[in-house]
Length: 221
Length: 221
DNA sequence: GAGGCTAATGTCAGCGTCTGACAATTGACA
DNA sequence: TGTCAATTGTCAGACGCTGACATTAGCCTC
Image (cartoon, rainbow over all chains, first blue to last red; front, side, top):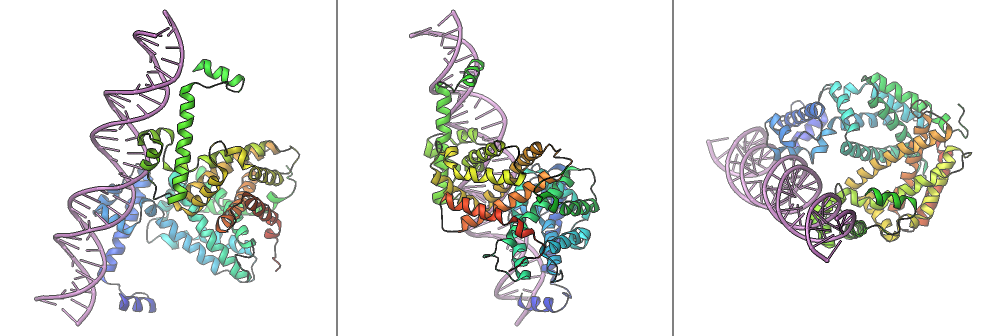
């Protein structure tokens, strides 16, 4: 283990051991099978046994890869979120907090493919997003995951601005409001007809532009 | 059934039938027992069998009162949320949207007792709130419930302003941002030492006052 | 106030998620 | 090749939750 990791970190892993590659293949096969089944017949109507059987492993093995049935449903979300967070960290230091968040999310939605295409086809990822939004138990987990991400975002924003996240409420507040806007955009997208990522991106940008007008003291019609 | 309801609706029910009273007693006994156990030994470490046994009913009966184990954990939250929503509906028509939301939430936190004291002691409700925030599965459900409430709030705000909630993004956006602020305040409260409701109320007011400064283009230190 | 009606409850069997324990298999590495 | 350790399979069982059916108990009429 120690030898492998040392080499792997130095360059792109020349070739991880057979054992490791096999594990990766099993894992991604489980993700693909799960998402395929979830999107085809629904999350609740899919059993873990079905997923395991589709990949020809035992149920017990499934639970060694994923702590629970929900976790596999969020495997590609996880990648996408990492992508987004990385985008935020790469933003120029001078940029204002909200502008940085805006830039990062539009960036991430712009090339979601990079983050997940080696795992599943992007189109499946989008279909799964809809399943998450329309399945109560998954939606709940999705919101909790979002809240966890927001905590990380707040810390990054505080770092950029040279503030103490526990002393100044603004980083957390900004991120919480930002998260609310993103959620509204995402929800409206899943309710609409257009599946394309571009639509989601545009919808997000549109809603972010509305933050100012929304907080105006008096709304004009 | 028909006769009873007609009478009950006209005045305050003079005395609901024995059957109905018994049901209410069983239900509230289940809530009390559940919250007592959840706060004492944790949500995950409490089984439905334990709760049922404490009230001397069968497990099956528990599931006739509550769709699942989570639902009983949110019984008092449900009351509190109703209280809050009612407070919003009672706000003067002239008030600006954000001011109305602010007034309603401070109002609701101010006299939480009214909403729940016939069910459980308010202090138990507060302890339960902490359990919810610190139990991942409950936190997830809590956030979903919040999102559902936000949808209702958005519709009420739109109604007040004479807008179509599906055509104008501002009601949903405002409520989403507002919800984010409330959550930050609530989370900080559970992490702190002070249990009192007053502290929560003050913390909420403080964070709401910070919305403007947070969205300023440049943050001053 | 006896008896029929129906709502509430108990009992039982069973499915699905998830976990611990132990045995069997299979890469890794000397 | 043989030893070691990681991965997997098998099995038993706890817990959440549901359908079906039997039992109990409030309600209402005569």
